Length: 156
Image (cartoon, rainbow, N blue to C red; front, side, top):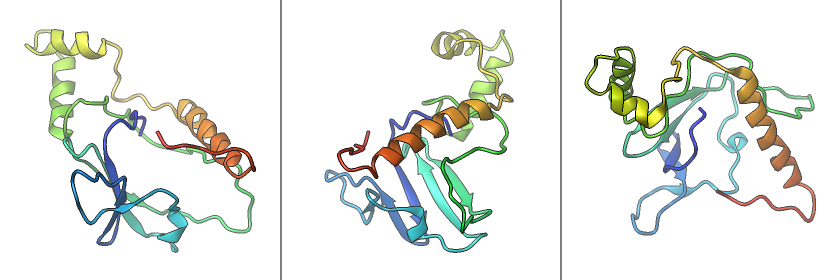
């Protein structure tokens, strides 16, 4: 998505939720560390949920479109998409709509505050697959190092 991974999140597979459990807030959430998607997803067309930022509650349904087998996959790649990721901390989906409305109209009462916060350059229609692939490539390199003895990848 392009967010900074600074908020709590969870993955939902059926009724089971995985994330980073917080001992201060007991829940049924299971620890995501060490888990892989292949443990939960076996077939094309399967859907799982992803929720980011529990306060703003960005909910996503992720669909497995294709499973590649008998091939060496070296890097995750973004092949298509659309629109920009909402800015971090813009609020919930209705908050993002309010942000877009304010940014389209310099006479809007919230326009000066939004420009001060995020700048004028946000383009909601922009999609940058090359930038996404650069970030995925960095992640893939770190993941491959984790398989080499002597290297360990820590969580953020």
